[in-house]
Each structure stands twice: as structure tokens, then as C-alpha cells.
Amino acid sequence: MVSAAALVLVALLSGPTATVPSNATLHLKIEPPFTEIEPADVLSQFLQTAPTLRSVTGTIERAKTDSRVTTLVIRPVAGAALWAQVQEVRDALVDFKSSGKPIVAFLESGGAAEYYLASAADRVVMMPAGSLELYGLASYELFFRGALDKLGVYPDLLHIGDYKSASNTFTERGYTPAHREMMSAINRDWYDEIVRAVASGRQLEDGRVAQLLGGGPYLAEQAHAAGLVDELAYEDQLDDKAPIQGTERLTAEQYQRSSGSGRRGSTGGRIALLYGVGTIASGESQFDSPTGGLVLGSDTFTEWVREVRVDPDIRAVVVRIDSPGGSAIASEVIWRELMLTRDVKPVVVSMGDVAASGGYYIAAPAHVIVAQPGTLTGSIGVVTGKFVLDDALDKLGIGADSVTAGESAGIYSPFRPFSPDERVRIEDQMQAVYNLFVTRVAEGRQQPNAAIDAVAQGRVWTGRQARERGLLDELGGLDRAIAIAKERAKLDPSRPVDLVVYPAKRSVYDLLSSSLITSGVRSERLEALVGRPQARALESAASMLQLFRRGEVLALLPNIFGTAR
Image (cartoon, rainbow, N blue to C red; front, side):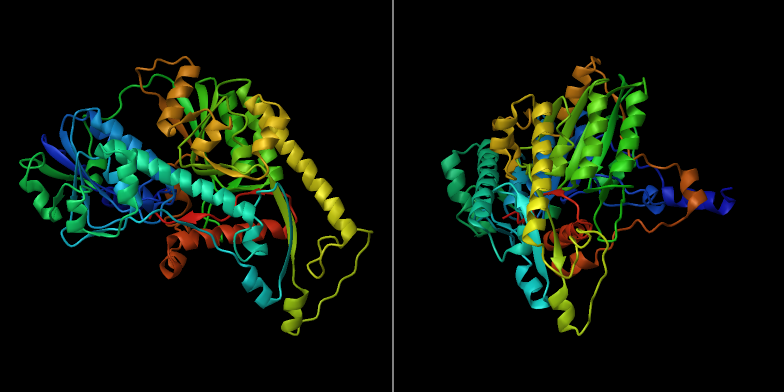
């Protein structure tokens, strides 16, 4: 039973409802990367937590139709983000402008991602002491082969697909020619998208924008002289001029605690929104795994799919995927449940930053696939192998021995490499998995296997490149995917739908009955030590190591992280 003290604590933590003034300027800090899933621990239900991508875009969407909000001020801080989330937020800002309400962007400093967001505004203001770090776009990857050699660990890893580079993280010291070709094409496409968007927002020619984006870094005065910013001022000076002058300041936190105009009304039907986020593995999902990342468990996800498939009130299913892939077996299990569902009701996939390899595998059953231009997707290929530890153990003076029963019992022994015969057998198995992967995609995309194989080979594509090659249908964000699901379910497009979200937030009663404080708060020590993008890559590598250790055939994306510069 929930105690009286617990109920008092709930009341104290919940805090008062905020009031929105009738003439308000909404101040919104935009700091991707965002989480996709809201935390489920008790305290997060009542205390301010990191915003999700949907909460940020939802705040912008709500303010668009809220007559009390007359102006939007954004402060972009996006140094460690990939591009799909940044594009999704910018789409929401562009849509906000259709209301006729002005947007003012304030920059203390920033690079390409911050300026990309700011370029959606009607006016860009920079702090006089700030700077714009515009000098092109770079992406980085970590390679651990040198460290493994020093440790005496041999990565005996195999892959199918000329461009399949997930194992390169451990087998190489840098880019292979195919890997470099692929990453150069991705980086260039990201850059071209920035140029197009900034040119549109600032009403400049593409060539001039490309010149400006490569001409930095700029001091604030130089950025102003070049026409990149409209005014130099401090944040406290923003309200000295129209359109902010005479309005009342409203923070995003206050707005989220308010009620009234701008909230969505009665529903026009129910659509399930399933979050497929994290490394794909068999078993239960983990929303805070030992490596610090999320795990998309096939058992958990298929349970959700079966539930929404048989629910007569659920008219369509939207799957939001942000996953680099993982276990091929777990991906096939999820694929099967979604294929059964597409025969019953519409299935639409919305891709986030990454929906590649196994992440694309589980997208293949969708009637429609939607992604941002900067989404990383494709990577239709497989890897497997093992790490041989005999030299490492020898350096430590540790002896190792084994006994086996069965001719092939030692095939995944960590104390020796694969024999030539074992290698042939494993490659045959991998080829069969790759062929099945291609077949699954061909079935979903209604294309010949040969056509899919031609754009597969483990190659990673941006969303724009993937659309040109028939791997997805539309460019856009989650809202666009929901609109398509409404249309396919024959729901009234003028009425908002009721989204039934998985994973569902537990009730306050359930949370307090089980535990006041859970361990679901992700540690940020690694990020503080090496930075967010490097931490993300290391966490992904740790997840990959766990999967390689099991000897599974994997559908995994390489460790790509970028700078928004």
C-alpha cells in the first residue's frame, strides 16, 4: 500500500502548475542529442529531466497554435549531435513560422549544427564576444586495433558485404578504401543538406553559403559583417527591441507545467507508437544497460507488437527506430511480428538518427518508411567472429587449456584463431544470413533481390541517399510518419490522434509500490571524462564486444560519431 508520506512526497515533487501570460515570449534552449524515450524512474515523473526529442518538437508545435505565445526565442547548443535529430527540430521551427509568429535565435557561440538551427529564425543574434566555428564538416570514428595488438588480443572477425565496416572498429587502424568512400559520401551529403537549408533560411545562393560555411572561424563582428548574423547583443538585451519588447518571458519548463490554449483536443482515433531504440538483442529490453546504452530486446518488443496487433482500438502502428542493429536472430524475430502486423493494420516506420543494419532489418516490413535526410540507414550486411586471447593471457602469465567433445566444439575457442575449414563454414553461414537479410528487404520494398543486393553490401546511406535508391519512401520526421499512419488508417486528418506509447510510463502507484528510487539513471562519468560523442562510440563498442562474445552473426553499424562543425 502506498503510504501517506509517499503521497505527500508526490505532491511536493509535482510542484505548482505554471501560468502562461497573455503576451508571452517562449525561450527554448535546444541541446541535442536528445533521448527518444522518457525515463521511467520515480523521480523523473516529478522532477525536471532531460527533454526528449518529442517533448521539444511538441513544445514548438503547441506554441505555434497557442495565442498566448507571440514570439519564440531559441538558443541552440548542439555540438555533439548527429544530424537527423537536428533536422527534425529545424523542421518543427520552420513549421512554427507558418503561424506568422517570429523566431529569434540567440547564439553565444556555435558551429554548423547550431547555425543550421539558427538559420530557421527570422533574426539571428550573437553575443558580442562569441564566435562562429564554421569551417566545414567532419566525422570521426575510433579504431581499436592498435590497442588490441598491445594487449595481445587478436580480432578474428569476418564480414559479408564490401562496405560492411562494423568489424573495422577492431580489425583496422583507420579507414579502408571502401570505408573511406562510404564515409566521404555520407559526410558530403550531410554538408550539402546544411548548405541547402541555410541558403533557404538566410535567402542566399548555395554557392555563397558554401563559401561562408568554409570561411571560419568567425569572431562575432566578422560573422555580422559577413551577414551570417543580424545583430550583436547580449541575451538580456533581446527584450529591448521588437518583437520581444513588451512581452513577458516564459521558460520551456514553465510552459510544460502549464495548461490551456495550444494543447491538443479530443482524439480522432488511436495509433500505437512503439520505440525501437538501442542495440538489438534477444531477451528483454534494457533501458539502462551495464554499458550505459539502451538494449532493444526482441522479447519485449514482440510483446508490444502482439498487444497492439490484436487491440481493435489501435488503428495503425508507428515504429520509431533509433538503432545501429545487433543480433540478426533477434532482428528476424522482430521482423516476423511486424510482418504479421502489416497484414492486419498499417505499419509505418519513422527513423531517427540511426536505423541501420539490424535497425533497417526491422524497418523492412513497414508499408511506408520515413527518415530525415541525415538519418544513417541501410548497412545491409553481417559480421561475426571472436577475439583470440591466448597472447594476452600469455603476457599476464595466465595459462589456459580446455577439453572438448565433438569435432567442432572448439570453433569459438577464445584461445586460437579459426582454422581454414572453420572459416569456410562460418562464411557459408554468414552468406546465408546475408541472403536472408536481402530477401527480407526485397519482400518489404517489393523489389528484386538483385536490386537490393546492389545497394546493400553493408553500405551505410543517408536518408536522402537511401530514398534515391528505394530503401525508404519519404523524407520527414515522426510527425510525418504519424500523419501517414492516420491517412492509411482512414482517420480524420483534421483531428488529433491519441498516441498509445510503448514503453508506457508506469503509474505513480506502481512506481511508489515497487521502489521510490530506481537505478535507471544513466551514469554520465564517461561523458565527463572523454566527451559525449566519444562516450557514445565507446558504449557502442562495448555493446558490440558483448555480442561478438556470444558468437552470433550480427547486423551492426560501425561506430560513427560526428562533430557538428
